[in-house]
Length: 350
Image (tube, rainbow, N blue to C red; front, top):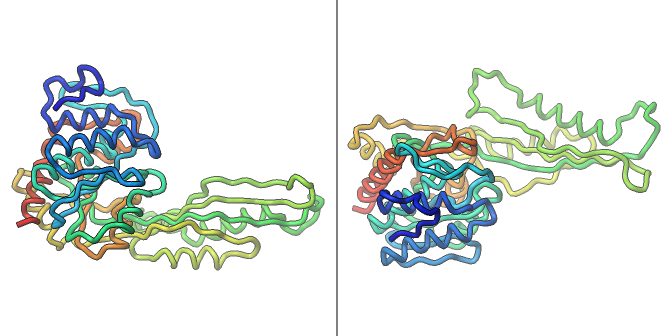
């Protein structure tokens, strides 16, 4: 079945590679995944699988719930010209995470396991939250993100986002007391200093603090000074979201912090049946399995926080190319990942 989203791009490609190329050729920035979702849906329909697009835009193809394969449809913005050159596919999303997404769709068709393509992972994780709130827990989850065909990701840091707000009376700049802007700066400095650690501890095991936006100044009526700071914390599995909130709130002297819905950290065991199946499949393909921990956050954090089943994250591609202007994926690696996923699903459904 050929859709030929970009004329001539898929000539000479296999069915599995064509799905990947078509999806990469279809813009799917977070919040605008509908066209890519339709292409993905058509792939399952062409292979006589039950499939639909749910109310938030997820592509749902339920089947054998011994395994749920799931990855995200959306990409970050960025124009990376799509082409196949010397066996390499170039284009936005080829690595993060259309390569993993397409490889999972192919493996799901080959093995008859369940599949969901979720939306807005790069922004709100709306698709993953909707899934855990509206779907029964499967026996196992394999989440799709680039790990390299021979890598298995077992851990991610969580993320806590919030907004600090302070207001003070407007006074002459010669007065010694802090205004709201100074209070905001002082609060953030205290919080950042608390989490400042020796680099020898390693990024994964530390809290990363980032101010995202900072706004401040006199109010329109000229009677007060306001300051607003949007902040983010990356939280390692050795701590909880509540641990970080307690520190941030404990450093407040003026103002308050309003927290968004957090995504908790996750660290799964390398001894689960899912991890074991991956190690066996990678070795059978003449690879040397690598166990990874990522300093970012993925939808696996959400699944692990809501479902008590074995899981891991896997997918073709070099994660150093995530969001990069030269994002590309070797088709041979993609094919190898499809084979590994197929073998893992066959093992877990026995």
